[in-house]
Length: 383
Image 1 (cartoon, rainbow, N blue to C red):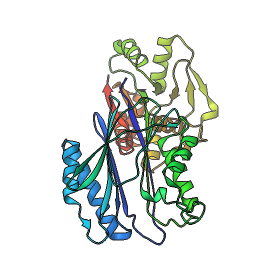
Image 2: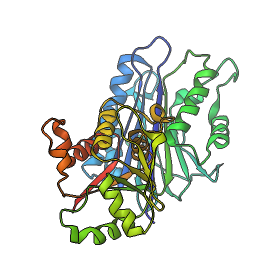
Image 3: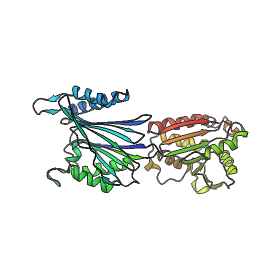
């Protein structure tokens, strides 16, 4: 089965600096995730410009399907070297993670990647080659579900220097900490947060260097299907429900009539949970075999409003209404497939009701666009 790569990023600015001297770029493509992390020499504006230039060149070339070797060659030839200190003005790590499970990682003068399997650091063997006088380390890793891959800048390893750790936290101590923290129930974002918090504590809240952390969690893709609205042709009800129930992952039904059709197909009672009613969202339902059952247009519209307002998972953690449950479903999976019925609900044609009530597909489209902005994959199907 193909693998999915979830990522989380955190940065801390060097104390008294307004710009980070590191740069991170991550993007998802049809068959891969690409990543670039660069650390500009020094700190402040100059370091920020050099680091950003490095990641932009790398990502632009990778997104144009140029080979990784060519990207490295271009970077090593482009990046200048400080003639006095004999140091590159910008270091980098570049990686490509492929759905089949292979990762290619190239590092130049940057801390080695931390690779965990079953919460144990694994050796990530590398080949070294010299390009334009610069020593490059290249790694190829075969990944499995449950693995973690963590990239850090020097600021992480230097944490605590002259204090708790006279010579700095160092790679071994950082890797050991990550081993202890990398529980499978954590998200990539959670682990990046934990590392950043600890680094900040080691610096006593005043980082002596720019800090960058990128966490990649390797897992299988989490899927959900949302069925909303009856099919335009009633003769297609049974076929559509069978298709819906046959889809992998979590299943959600939005709409009273739609829920009744599914309940009839399942031969199960549809119950209303009045404890979940709120001022602006109707109560949810319960139906054996379905993960989430809620009212249709009003609930979808409220979910769309929440997404547009920038709502996060923690904002709806303890709410029980249908819109909050729908938001949690959306944000806890990677791919959402909308199965949209085209039957016209006469109740939604009342001119006194908000205009969007009559346009189910438009509301779903709005939700889809907001979720895409958050890195979710969205597909639609009308019936």
